[in-house]
Image (cartoon, rainbow, N blue to C red):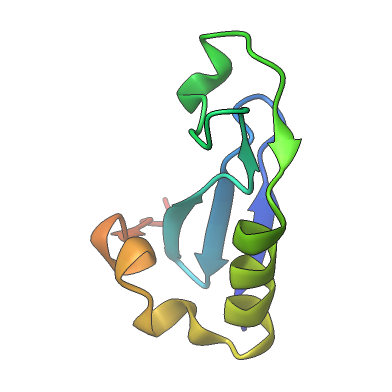
Length: 80
Protein backbone atom coordinates (compact mmCIF):
# COMPACT_ATOMS: atom_id res chain seq x y z
CA UNK A 1 0.00 0.00 0.00
CA UNK A 2 0.98 3.61 -0.56
CA UNK A 3 1.35 6.00 2.34
CA UNK A 4 1.58 9.82 2.12
CA UNK A 5 3.30 11.72 4.97
CA UNK A 6 3.23 15.48 5.51
CA UNK A 7 6.73 16.68 6.44
CA UNK A 8 6.10 19.53 8.85
CA UNK A 9 9.55 21.12 8.51
CA UNK A 10 9.12 21.61 4.74
CA UNK A 11 5.33 21.23 4.18
CA UNK A 12 6.11 18.66 1.44
CA UNK A 13 4.34 15.35 1.11
CA UNK A 14 6.52 12.25 1.12
CA UNK A 15 4.97 9.22 -0.58
CA UNK A 16 6.18 5.79 0.49
CA UNK A 17 5.43 2.40 -1.00
CA UNK A 18 7.55 -0.36 0.46
CA UNK A 19 11.17 0.57 -0.25
CA UNK A 20 10.20 3.27 -2.78
CA UNK A 21 9.87 6.90 -1.73
CA UNK A 22 9.09 10.12 -3.57
CA UNK A 23 8.13 13.72 -2.91
CA UNK A 24 4.80 14.96 -4.20
CA UNK A 25 5.07 18.65 -3.34
CA UNK A 26 3.09 20.71 -0.88
CA UNK A 27 -0.66 21.17 -0.50
CA UNK A 28 0.15 24.51 1.17
CA UNK A 29 0.71 27.58 -1.04
CA UNK A 30 1.33 31.27 -0.41
CA UNK A 31 -0.99 34.09 -1.55
CA UNK A 32 0.68 33.98 -5.00
CA UNK A 33 -0.12 30.28 -5.43
CA UNK A 34 3.50 29.23 -5.02
CA UNK A 35 5.11 26.63 -2.80
CA UNK A 36 7.66 27.88 -0.29
CA UNK A 37 10.23 25.15 -0.87
CA UNK A 38 12.03 24.45 2.38
CA UNK A 39 9.97 27.21 4.06
CA UNK A 40 12.78 29.65 3.24
CA UNK A 41 10.74 32.75 2.30
CA UNK A 42 8.76 32.79 5.52
CA UNK A 43 5.47 33.78 3.89
CA UNK A 44 2.25 32.51 5.47
CA UNK A 45 1.00 29.38 3.73
CA UNK A 46 -2.59 28.27 3.30
CA UNK A 47 -4.08 24.91 2.45
CA UNK A 48 -4.86 24.95 -1.27
CA UNK A 49 -8.12 23.03 -1.67
CA UNK A 50 -7.36 22.04 -5.27
CA UNK A 51 -3.95 20.56 -4.39
CA UNK A 52 -5.41 18.89 -1.31
CA UNK A 53 -8.17 17.28 -3.39
CA UNK A 54 -5.62 16.12 -5.98
CA UNK A 55 -3.52 14.54 -3.23
CA UNK A 56 -6.60 12.97 -1.65
CA UNK A 57 -7.76 11.46 -4.96
CA UNK A 58 -4.30 10.06 -5.68
CA UNK A 59 -4.20 8.47 -2.26
CA UNK A 60 -7.73 7.03 -2.36
CA UNK A 61 -7.23 5.62 -5.87
CA UNK A 62 -3.69 4.46 -5.00
CA UNK A 63 -2.69 6.39 -8.14
CA UNK A 64 0.75 7.47 -6.94
CA UNK A 65 2.38 4.77 -9.08
CA UNK A 66 1.00 6.50 -12.18
CA UNK A 67 1.42 10.16 -11.20
CA UNK A 68 4.22 11.84 -13.22
CA UNK A 69 5.14 14.16 -10.32
CA UNK A 70 5.71 11.20 -8.02
CA UNK A 71 7.46 9.05 -10.63
CA UNK A 72 9.89 11.84 -11.53
CA UNK A 73 11.31 11.89 -8.01
CA UNK A 74 10.93 8.18 -7.15
CA UNK A 75 13.87 6.62 -5.34
CA UNK A 76 14.45 3.14 -3.99
CA UNK A 77 15.75 2.94 -0.45
CA UNK A 78 18.10 0.10 0.30
CA UNK A 79 17.80 -1.62 3.66
CA UNK A 80 21.14 -2.15 5.42
